[in-house]
Length: 129
Image (cartoon, rainbow, N blue to C red; front, side, top):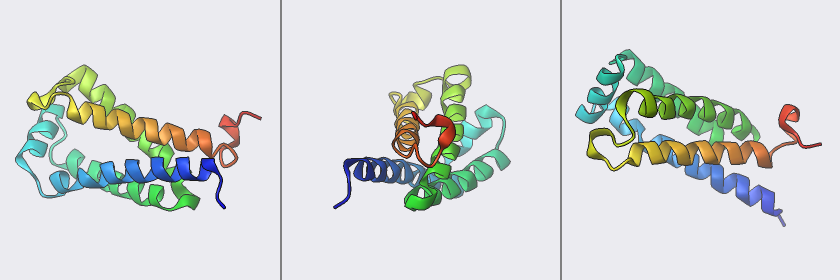
């Protein structure tokens, strides 16, 4: 039987991957809201497409347990950028969404941090031993 850490890591990885994947439709389909956001950030269209590619790679790495720690590291980097963009440039309540995008970025960040903490044997530099 699998231990509790296994299930915590898997749930966190799946939640983060699903949240990253669901946003890809908007980025890759050039949805007007996505174009507006990345225009305000000053990186439309290349930033939108590149970010979508990085998010897809991150989600795929998170899905597989052997690479979830790498996906978590990438996810933290991406979410630091997203959270910073919300705080410094576009605002937490972007486009009257009630802070949904900001909250989703925070959830992905928390899930990625959880993965790294639970899989501390994979990353000795954050190990508690």
